[in-house]
Each structure stands twice: as C-alpha cells, then as structure tokens.
Amino acid sequence: MRRKLAAGNWKMHGLAADLAEATALARAHPAPTVDVLLCPPATLICRMVGALARTPVAVGAQDCHASVSGAHTGDISAAMLADAGACHVILGHSERRADHGETSAQVAAKATAAHAAGLVAIVCLGETEAQRDAGQTLAVVSEQLRQSLPESADAENTVIAYEPVWAIGTGRTPTLEQIAEVHDHLRGLLPDPAIRLLYGGSVKPANAADIFAIANVDGALVGGAALKAADFGAIVAALEAAEGGAG
Image (cartoon, rainbow, N blue to C red; front, side, top):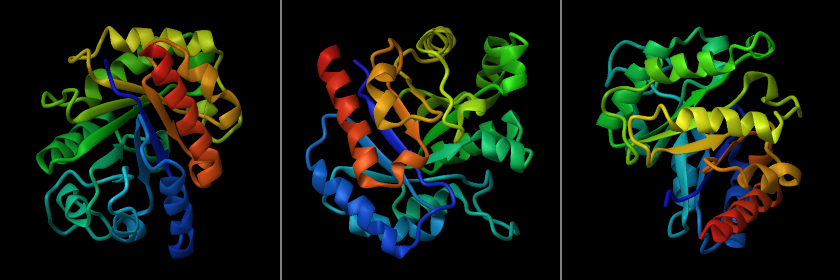
C-alpha cells in the first residue's frame, strides 16, 4: 500500500520567527502514521532542518536548477538543496510554469537533476480554468505528465501532485468527482503504479477528509493552510484517519 504524504508548500512566506510553526507541528504529531513534509523558502531550509532534527517532519525545497553548478545567478542546484538538508523538491508548480515560463521539458530536466542528487521530485500538473471549461483537463494533464517525467522516475524518487490552476489559492475546489476522475486517469498513465498521487488546490481542514476519502488520492500538497501548525496539523490528522480507514 502506498504510504500517504502531507506536503506543505510555504511558497514565498516565512522568516526565522515562523520556524515556531514547524516545531509546533512536530510537537503535535510526534509519531505520525503518514509522511509529513514542509517545503519552506530556500533561506529557511538549513534552519528548519536543524529545528526539526530528531522529529519525523521532513524538509524539502520549492525548486531547483537543472545544472549541477554554473553561472546561474540566483539559482540553486539540486545538489545544494541536498547539502542544505532537503530531501524533496517541488518542481513544475503552476506558479513557476506561469510566472517563469517553465516548460514541461524543463521540469523533466530538473527532475533528472533532483534524482541525481538523491532528492524526491514532487512534479506538479494541472489545468487552467479555460482548459477545464473547454473539456481539455485530461488531455492537458496527460501531456504534462508525459513531458515532465524523466525515464528515471519511479515510486522511490517521484511524487505527482495534481493541482488545478484555478483552485490554487482561490478557495475554490473541484468536486470530489472531478478530483477522482483526474486521479484515476493519471494512475493509469504512471510508469510505476506505486508512485504517489497528491491533490493540491485550496486544501484545508474543512475539506481534507472528503478529499482523502477519494481512491487514488495519496495525500495533499498544501499551500496557505501549511503555514500554521494548527491548520496543517488538522490536515495531517485527516490524512492519518484516511490511512487508518484504508488499512
């Protein structure tokens, strides 16, 4: 059985004082029955790794460059992230695809670099509202999956996160049937059926249990609700309950 994963993406939020939320989460969940991951800004990775030492909460990053090193001012390589203590890296998030023009081919190159550095790549997929309204959702996510996954992808080094672009940070959430349709479709396309599929897009304590009850949803990639220990802890608890029910 695929072990559930609750991953928190802090995006461009968080200063040193906010590490208290990470440690509060670890105190509230000292022995979680699911995997728990926080991905803070790069400036906090080292300090969060230290703050969460000897706890089960893992630390990841939000992006990496495809090259190991070089003249890439402002970029960070996968090897640097691993050296800082990160174990995962989010790649291809819709905000980077939109704001930075990242293509699926670039995401695949970054995933290859992440794998080479020993990081687990969390590869994000998702359709825009216009694509959803045009009935193109399955075609869009299928093509993103095909182009974004390198040949090295397997259940040990890769997680897929389906995040409909129109639901991220908007408070809007697809229907449970829409989420199930996409996750069922993606499951049939994965090169390794044991790869975990996360849902992301306005996941919060109020809707987490219903989302986690859907077949082929192996956890969540959480944005805003991951910034506060109480909110993210409630989502972790809902995922633990779902894992217990599945078991």
